[in-house]
Each structure stands twice: as C-alpha cells, then as structure tokens.
Image 1 (cartoon, rainbow, N blue to C red):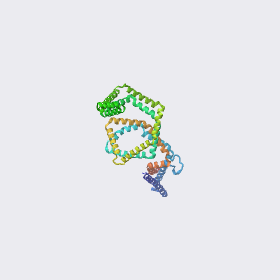
Image 2: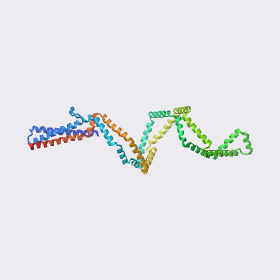
Image 3: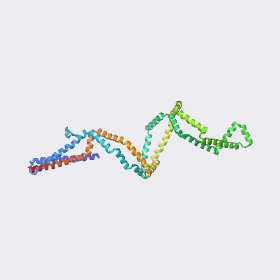
Image 4: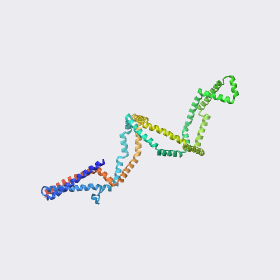
Length: 424
C-alpha cells in the first residue's frame, strides 16, 4: 500500500540521516581530541564518511528536486526531463511490448481458442459464465427500461426508419428474392400445395355447398328441376368433386410448365412491381407516407410498449431467479461451444487464424495509440506526483546508496590515511 511504502521510505531516510549525523559527531569528537592516537584514524574515517554521505545525499536529492532549494545546475532531473522521459517510456512500451510479430507469436504460443474451449467444456465453468451473463443481461434490461434510454433508443430507431426509402428498399429486396428464379420456385411450391389441398374432401364439400348456394340464388328453377330428379346434395357433391379435380389439374398444369402463360404473367407482375417500387415517385411517396403514418400511429406505439413491458417483466422475473432458465440455457450453450472447440481442430485453426489476422491489423494502431497515451499521461502528471511515485518506487534503494556511500567513503578514508602514514 502507498502508506506503507511512504513509511518505509521515511524510515530509510532517517537511518541515512542518523548515520550522517553520527559521522559528523565522530569527526567533531576526534577533532576535539586533537586527532591524537586512535582519534587520528577515527577522524580519517569519519571525515571521509561524512564527505561520502553528503555527496550521495546531494546526488539522490538532485534526481528529484534542487538540493536545499538552490539552483545547482543539472539538478531536479526528473521534473526537468519529464517530457523526454514520458516520450521515451511510451516508445519503450510500444517497441518492446506491443511489437506486432511478437504479439502474434505470443498469441500463437498461448493458444487461446483451445484454452477457452477446455475451460468452457467444464460444466462448472460454463454455468459460472451463465451466472455472470445473467447479471450482465439483467443490467442491460434495466438500462433499456430507463425512460431516458428508452426514449433515446426510440427516437434513434424512428429517425433511422424515417430516413429509410422504404419503396426502393422493398424493390431491392424483392429483386434479391426473385434472383435466379427463386420466386418461381416458391410459386411452384404454392401451386403444388394448393392443388393437393383442393382435392381434399373438406374442400370438395365446401365447393359443393357454394355451388348449391349460388344455384339456389341465381338459378332456382334449375335447382328445383334437379330436386325432382334426385337429391341436389348428391349432384352438388359430384359437381364439387369435378370442379376440385379440374382446378387441381389446372394448378398442376401451371406447376409443371415453366413457360405456362400464368407463370409468365406472374413474372411480368413481379417485374412491374420492382420497377414501380424503384422508379415511380408517386408510388414511392404513397408508400413512404404510409410508413410515416404507421411509425407515428398511437396504436402501434401502444402495442410496441405493451410488448416490451411484457418481455421486460418476463426477463426480469426470470433473471431474478437463482435457477434462471436463461442462465441455465446460456451455460448449456457455452459448454457445447467449449466441447465443439475442443473436438473440432479445423474450427480452432480457423478461429485462431482470424484472431491472428485481427491482431495483425489492429496491433499497429494499438501500439501507436498506447505509446502516445502513456507518454501523454506521464507528461500530464504534476511534477510533485511524478516525483512522489518515483521516490516511493525506488527511494529505499537510493537511501541504501546513501548508507553504502557513507560506509564506503569512510573505508576509503581509512585506506588513504593508512597510505599517507605508510608513505610519510
């Protein structure tokens, strides 16, 4: 924690200062004894140690601020060189950690697709993921239910639909659906289904009733004549069956002949609709006007809000339950996905290749942006904050330098004093 680091740094500073003061006291005491006998050696040690301590104190302080507040040259290095240090740090992170070939090599070595599959294939992990997704989905639903968010989404969707040329879009969609004769395939399937349905007994009874009703209304004399010869219902059933067979036969004839006039007429109608949807301004205006009325109809708005309220209530009730069906199902889907990733090597290879391709395309922009962001962040730090963070990070080691400088200076003083005595 920062408080602990600051306390340890203060402790080390006090130790270095105490050793410096001890050396000063020793030197004072040795001088008071006129450097007689052993005090000569103590003075040599204490004087050199004091010089070493003061020199290292000056060097350490000069990294972060001006010693004693005086404008010594080449001091307060960190604040003065902050911009340069920021740029160099950003370049270092960019070049050493975000190099594209290195990222791809590490990604390949990590094999994230296989690891993800192995993790998801374990039921406990898959259910845990489902639980996390349950919470996320609940937050999303709650967010969308916020009146401010809901109104914003509604305005955005409405504005988007208002700007949509529904007529031309419908023409493009219809042309896509009719490409390569798809509409004729659907038309043919509808003809076959209709022919089979027409020949069923319920349809024949319906046709019989309709024919008898029409005959009774339009040709009452004919119906009474038929009644004298037998039951009109029997005649109606035979006529209905014959009509159904004739209609079914005609439908199958249209179905079997790709060049049947009805098929060609269907082609012409579809082509005409596509052309009108795309080029007829009056037709387009009527469609878009109808779209506008539809979008702003109070009844539609009420229906949409009602459907959303019902869906929201169901989702929130389910997501609030510990054994949520959605959560359980998401866990099952996640586990199946994991099992597929584990067992399907070709799928893993394909996903890995796409992932590497995405990294290859995104990494250059990412590395430039990350380097620039780091440099900009460091440059924007207040000098005091930067100095404090660096001192908390390396300050204790720098105080050890002061301690070592004091001891090593004293030992060098003893060595020089011994050399002086030997040469004297």
